[in-house]
Length: 511
Image (cartoon, rainbow, N blue to C red; front, side, top):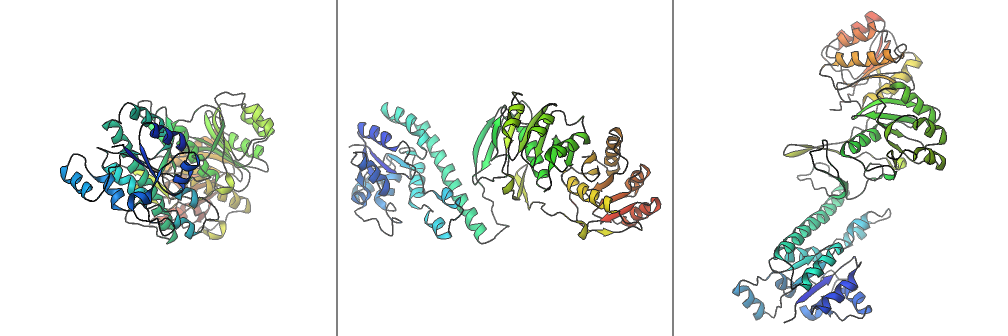
């Protein structure tokens, strides 16, 4: 008896030569719908599925392979006489090879004008069923879901048959594939009914890059992209120059992009080790970068830069003077590229800033995941409450607003000193808040930018020591969320030194 192959594919890449080789090896080809038509147009003579099931395709092709003569031929165990007897009794012939890929659900829902009806119609039912049946019975059945596997599967078939190890490998790929397919459907329908806290979390990602190593050189790592790509993201960025990204590069670049998203005016963000070392705004992007650079000209060395405007020649000339790892922008002018690409290893990335959209935040922990809504709230001066006798000046209000945007993206305990257009001192990740204040003040003093700066704290002051220390260093305006049982002590301390203090009512921890 000839071996039988059942072939039904949406992706017809490489299909005809693959099936031609199967025919040469003596396989009897069973096919359906558009696949059958494509093979016939190529001069091949597949058997229609109706000839196997003795039942017509119906309901616009929704029902064609869900039949005992198909699934019996896939699931019947060749090593069990009872299975073989049942197959013989009911006229079911074994199917030895299944080549199936699924309706293009992902491609369909990625279209801007997709309707729900189109999406539903592109949910494949028969395809996953055949794949799962064949994969379950991989002891006897070879199942191929990816055209990339055609060549090596043919090589083994030409030697007589695929090995059990290969069939197990292909079966595992099938179940990964169908799981990812179902996850996308589940995600789409869940969004359609606006459910946010589901009993299970099913997300699927595709491999974008195998990394040289992880956080440290002895750790293996990979970079996966959301199956439905997010335009404003490192995963969707287009690298136009420089060496390959590392694990730490990706994490840092992601953190820098999140900061840049807060600012609408021309802004540059300089980042090192997941924290900003300088943020600057200006009338032009060149001015903005200069402000970010002057915020901390030491720490910026070897850092990551995100610019929310296209890079022009003036900006490129400034950028090329220092050692940087990565520059990210919405575009690079041709002459600017000529300047920057002289540095062989400098990574240049283009990101679509017009399609920034907040995404749920997912963090791994041992044995699970933490999922939270994005921190997409940003309080404006209209939301603030002045809690001290002295009110901030117009200039101080502008500086406090800038500092409040920046401190949101600094690791807690977070303190930012800033003027109206740049950060001047950043204290991050300390175990007590006054320690962060001291670091920020010292940095600002070293850069001769302490005078006239304001202070932002991502969370309330548990005691008045931070307020007192800041006031003693000449800080005249403070913004913080408030909410401590000792708020009044901090207010009293601010009043003692003539400091203006505003409460936002919302904290912005970033652990």
